[in-house]
Length: 363
Image (cartoon, rainbow, N blue to C red; front, side):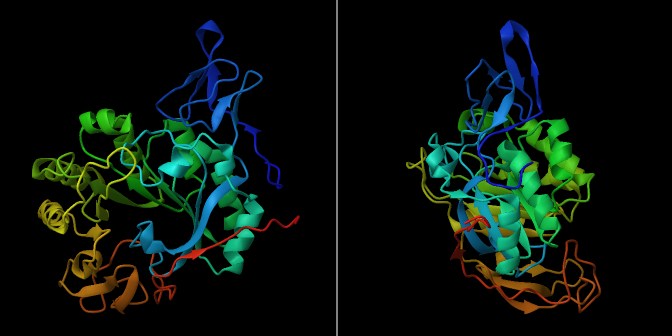
């Protein structure tokens, strides 16, 4: 890909089908497009008998965050991550909290030009240890995300995907060969929820989780609990059991609190008691690292040793406190190895959030 910021680039995951249409093969929607049509994601469309990506090099929402906000609790805790997204999305979640970007059909939403090299240079200048493709799903801008990841790797900066995991197998394999860590949003554990609330399907997301389990990509899972939609004890138990049986007891799981947004303004916020109940259910199913999020719950957001029960990483919102891991990422009390990517000491970014403007090297 060219180094300078541009808008449209050709892609390769598509094929011609009947009646002169072209099918996009990036995600399970398999949009079938005539000349001039866009897919549901809006940033991929047909032009001159091929599928183009229209958001390459154009982004918005640049912020430096604590990595725990992604959330990733077992990947370089305490370090800073540069976060950004683009317009569009390949799901239609009624509760979307970034709907102004993900549902946008206005390319001016992409306020800044940012080449992969610009983003890598910004990460280095701001001492960010990683970059996160977030706010909307990097599945739909995979070509841009992969080039950004490669440019960042040249600067020893890690690449993170915050994703719903709704992706086809061939592009998935290429995409994750460039990615170091991911948080996968497992939105519910029923096909009914995915169809009714998200306009998608559960099975492809489970396929992505199974795929990642067989790679070197570190990943954690988030489940946003929505009152009376996906928060029943039965569903939480079934999901936790599936994670235990297919991904193992050491896969971190985050239960996050819903707040009313976009097309679900009639729903109440998730009570903290619901998150605590979900955490207890998941741990009863054998999961060792279960967290609560979007609420003030120091016990539920801290990391505890499954061997001796000691608190190893204290978290108060996104602020780290007590640190009881040794240089090898083991419990300093009993020696139990904690899965993840840890360094000899935590980062010192803290809980702050800093907005950033990207300045291209050309101007």
